[in-house]
Length: 262
Ligand SMILES: [Cu+2]
Image (spheres, helix red, strand yellow):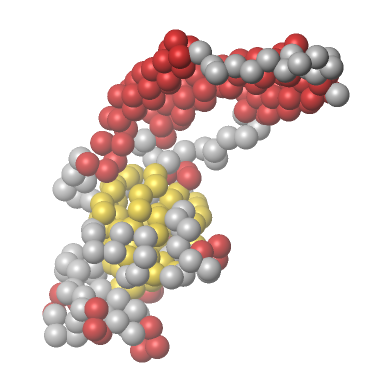
């Protein structure tokens, strides 16, 4: 029995490690400026954790077999404080080290200001849908008022009719962006915490009620990419998704015109 268990542990460890190592289980190709640094950091993390994972699982398999029941009295151990201290601090150093090595990628996308020519887009989360707002030709988002929010009248975001800046605002179910042009996304939520996630951009950021969370990117590949909500936000969470449509500059302008037409 102990031998079978040890073999099963070893087998599962080696098979799962193989699929990670040969790239079967990996992210789709990236389309943003963060992709290269992000993937390198991801690989480094996976390699370090992978070595520890394999070593720990093999040690477990060995221990299960070596100390199998042979009918004698069990020996009880209270552990080893020196060993506990060593591997706890080793794990601490590893985690803090990885954060220090990778933090510049996060800072670049989330803390540094977007380029001045970036196209601004608001992304609103609501149980269980996304609303994408474009500021229109004036480049200014109209004021929103919570008491005016009403889905049944098509006023999901409560754009104030008395604010001239809101007259040309465009609210869409999908996010279209021009290729190779910086885009700043302003994340807002009407109810609970949602999360904007596009695997191909290698970006994920929460939309939090009461906050305006910003991130920016430049998409380099025309195509259609899923935007699932990546925060368990309620019963309908599984169906909450939108799409990022990266278009050529001309197609994007055309899309804006078509969408704005009554
Ligand atoms: Cu959600």
